[in-house]
Length: 298
Image 1 (cartoon, rainbow, N blue to C red):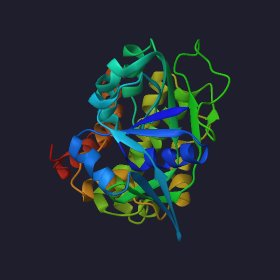
Image 2: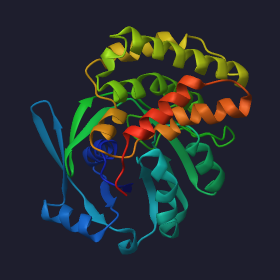
Image 3: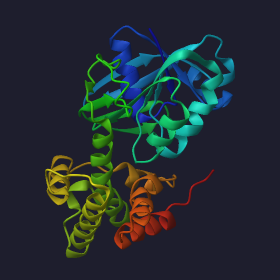
């Protein structure tokens, strides 16, 4: 089997390593010829660092225009704001029954993709793996988490996971929501205060923001008819403790002057709150503050 992967980001690189270990062929789809040449100059391989271990993953790489065989299996582990364009960029290369796995953060883009590309075998995944890039085509694996995969359309259920190691769920929409709710309470606090996940309750100011964010999201869930088994604040506390030494992706993006996914995290809450007639002033504050911190170079 051949897996095409959009980009060479941290999470995509982890999955490339797993595919390689399974003996599958990996083809990276990069944006520019310059990126492809840089990859070739570095030996046409991805590098994965985990503590003192270093492994390499041989891959082919090309731009979309250079693809000359139909894509049958496609992994999209991009930023939320890039996912839709990523699929559009390769749509002419997709096999009619292509399997597409969308592995992104945030909430809302998944539903848009489901609506626009339902003719394909569309699957959505959510992972708690931790990884970050420390150089082009080099990824540091920070934590091994759990990856869940399923369909948004419950009439299109699957019996086996196309990703070895990923667990099937018939409630991927709930998994995606749960993750974005937690991210809303952790990521912007870390980005604003330049702190690791474990420090979001370190001061009264930070803790009060987390409390208010969780309160607003639970009010929205009530309006949407989402039933919660565990209080959101309790889940946030658990995740913050388990990932205490992690630097959130939003913090990494702000630090490196990159565009963040805040529009699809806190911004998604703000949009839904408006739709359902509830107030979300703290989420709106986080959205505006992070946008002002971010100065993307496009």
